[in-house]
Length: 182
Image 1 (cartoon, rainbow, N blue to C red):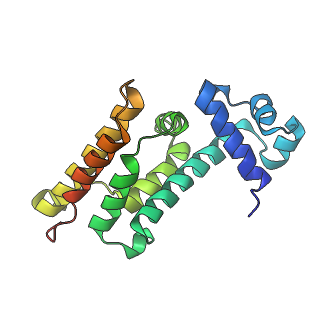
Image 2: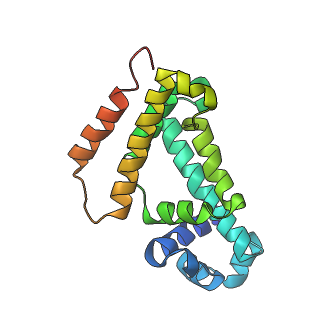
């Protein structure tokens, strides 16, 4: 299937962010990366803010699709343990620079955070007040924190885990989610 121009633009914008950061997303930089004119970009996105919001949605959508593929089913058909196991397996693969920068940037702007928050709510929801009394819910949240910690470790340090070590850590975290009481 052929990639749409809009998707090509969003992928080009992601490459700009990978190299130069979020602040470098301009119509000129993205148009040059996508091999389009600035007018061609304006046809799809009326403003830089609209483009940035679309990048957030694009990256969060890719992440959501990866988690669904890892689960082998949509979130609404998976148990809490299956959802979190899939989230753990995908999150422990590490993030791209663009994902990390957009998640950080998105955390300061509610509209930008919304696509990321929706993915988190589906796959790794936060604890509720009643979860404090539920050991299985606490175990799921601890596994989420471990997966998030591994993701941040890989994203923020120069240390690179070998694929074998990363897989072993991911499986160790996920193993705690497969027992019947979780």
